[in-house]
Image (cartoon, rainbow, N blue to C red):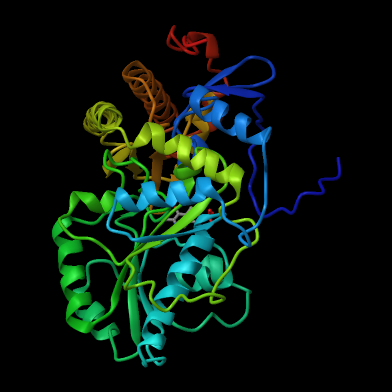
Length: 422
Ligand SMILES: *Cc1c(COP(=O)(O)O)cnc(C)c1O
C-alpha cells in the first residue's frame, strides 16, 4: 500500500480507537496500559471528564480569533500560571519547540535592549532536547538531528553535563543565557540535583546572564511539583512548558519575569494560533486539576510506588537493568542492552513505554494513574524481564532480548485487572 506519510517516524503498526484514564483500546477492544502518555502529554489521562467538558463547551462557542484581539481565557490562564510560579508574564505558543524559540529570542533581546547586542549566545548541555526547529536542533546539539541540514544555526555552545570547568570556559562576554532541562527527558532521564541548579543560578547572577529552564517535559506536575525546579530553592528568569499543559491539546508557553521579558516589545515576536481559545480552555482545565495540592500529593504517592517497583526490578534483574533513572512520574530503567527490543516486549505485554537515549526505557504514565495501575505495570515489566531472561538462557550468547520468543506469549495470561476501569 502506498504510504503518503513522510517517513520521519519509525511508526509501530498499532493504532488506538479510544482511551479512558490510563488505558488505550484498539478497535478490537484490546486494552493497553499507557505509561507513555503520548510522550508525557496526556497529563490527565485519556477522556478526562473535566478536560473533555471544558474543551467541548469552548468548541460550541469560539475556536479562533487571533492575537489581534483580547482572549479572556488566555488572560486568565496567564494570570493563574504566573501566580503559581516565579514569572510575571506568559507567551502562548503551540508546541515545546516554539516555546523554547520564544525563550531564546527573549534572552537575546533582553541583552540587546540593554545595549549589549553582542550577547546572543546560549549555553546548553549535552544530552539536551529542546525541539526540532533549525535553532532548537542547534540548541539540542545532537548529531543525528543536525545531520544533513546545512550549517548549524549559530549562537549555541554546548558543554558536557556536570563539567563546571567547561561551563565556565563556555561563558564569554557574548553569552546571553544558560538553557537546560532540570530533568533531561529524551536524553535519558538525568536529574539535576538541587545544588547543581543553585550553582547554575549563582553562576548566571555572577555573569549577568539569564537562566532558562526547559520544563516542557518535567513541568505541569510530572515530578509532584508544578515545575521540577521547585525542588530546588532557586528560580529561573525564563521557563517553558508544553507537553502536559494542554492535556493532549497542542500548546506551549514561555513564562518569564518582567525584567527578563523587558526587551520583548510590541511587534518583537508573534504567533497566529498560539493562545487560541480552544487551547486556553484545555490549559485552564488542566490547571483546575493539577494546581490542587492534594492532586500533587497523590502524584508523589504513585511516583513512590513506581520508584519502589522499578528499584525492585533493578535488584531482581541485574543482568538486564543497569539502573533506575528519573523522578516523579518520569522514571525509567537504564538497560545493559538496547531498549527497542524490550519496549517491544513490553508492548506484547500490553504496556506502553517510550525509549530515551542512553538505553533508557522511560515510563511517563498519566498523572492520574491509580496505585493499582502502577502495580499492574510493574508486574508486566517483571513478566517481560522474565521472558528476556528465558530467551537468554535458551540461547546463551545470543542477543540478550529476543522478540521471537515473546510472540508466543498469550495476552490472556496477563494480570486479571487489565482494563478493569471500564
Ligand atoms: C518534547 C520536548 C520539546 C519539544 O516539544 P515539541 O512540542 O515537540 O516542539 C522541547 N523540550 C523538551 C524538554 C521536550 O521534552
